[in-house]
Image (cartoon, one colour):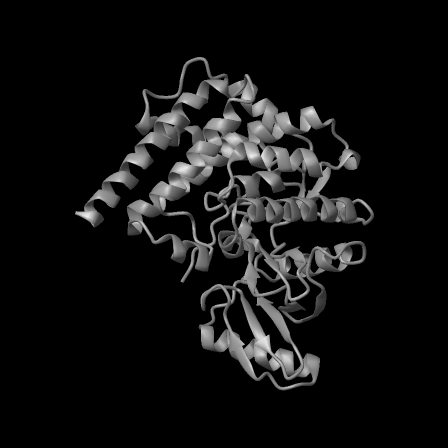
Length: 363
């Protein structure tokens, strides 16, 4: 069973008043099937779990089509997600169609079996860049679509309180064991001020590559909008580029961003990339912190398992990749530049672990 941890959880701990159902998987599935058969007027032929049995979403196989049914522990997020999909899908084709909500169960169109985090590994470098361009363009399109809606009036503002900003920036402490500590030249106050941006743009949040898929029509669509809200806008791209299982180098992704950039997003491109670089620095530290935590609990995992279940990237190669991302983007801003050497040292540490494990396997 996979672990879905949003390391940048802007509403972490915000569960007051949540309805948490205590269900077994069998009970949950029975509730979903009953709702589906009533809603669609067809029998459910088969139920499968794309992300594992412990997840919130199931693929329902009806006689004439497949649909995705979602039953989350927090019904408010389910209804909010339905509202987001209904709003965005009026103006773009880069998200699922909401097919209705019955009680606490949301039905949405099936966007495809070829999840981006696995599909991209089947391509050569040119094909990977093309898929990355599609993914980035899709994010810009659904953000543009959001500006034609009232989502800015309805959605929660993410990461706006001081506690969240402080926790986000303080993730750099996770780098200390791999180097001589966080440099004295690092200005934490300036970093916090740079991260504390006003919430002006709809963001999906959690745009890791496991949350997009290519459909039978060849179109890439993003799904899983339960944590959506308002923030700067660049955070969605940070989630993609800062996905430790994402195989493209950071400089390549910057080129993709420049090519796809939407000048109507409300920011000068230089300022936009500056903020994204700063944000990605701390996002990378957050991801590394999560990886180390999971390694201590259960050890390293095979890459294939991480991608199949959209787990945290608990593999030394993935840990090295997120350090590489952090090193590159921290160097792009004077605010975060002192941290580059910390990321570089951490990357070398994980590459040594990878080399040692490879040597043991070949011995």
